[in-house]
Amino acid sequence: MSDPAARLVPHIVALVTHVRHVNLSIDAHQQSSYGHVGAILVDAILQAGMRYETVNARARRFRSDQPGADTTSGLLALGGPDRLREVLRWPGKKPDQIHRLALHLADHGVNTVDQLAVFLSSRENVSGLRAVNGVGPKTADYLCILAGMSTAAVDVHLRSFASEAGVPALSYADLHSCYLSSAERLEVDPRDLDHAVWRYVSGRSRK
Image 1: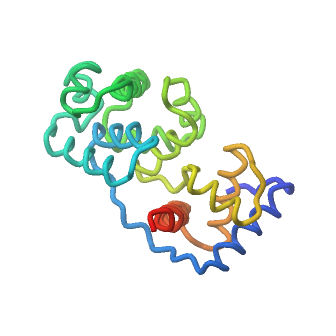
Image 2: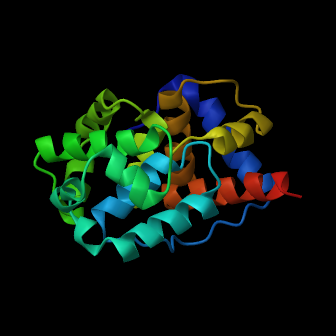
């Protein structure tokens, strides 16, 4: 990756130091892609504000119950937001967001999981996802992780860990850059650092 801006280096050093200070356990990435576009989009959109276990179980059930929704076209053929609400048993606006995201991908010629991974390999395309109502930078990066990309998705857990390290409040883009550079210095996959920090902070909050 490119060298971070000089102003971010002290924050990167602080993050790396804190990782070592708390003896953070960083395991090699084990999570495999769902291999199913519908399940990936379900997980990516439902995760905001929800427990990981709840969303993961719902996405896995969707993959099992709706094998034909393994492509973008198959997901759209299932029906619109109301049908998604029924199938997912999930009220509210998130099924609308899943449908809009599927339409956005279809408009860009993305149909299969492999095509999704290629599409998301472009940061311009990742940024373009934010044009979809309900998709912010964190959701866009989490979608990348679900598609098998090596990156980090900065959520409240990663922000909390950074704050503990003495890192001031930064923009999403700056803190994201700090985590990517920290992973590089630690010689680990950014996904693994992301998951380790998430597990550390969330596990502590449940005690």
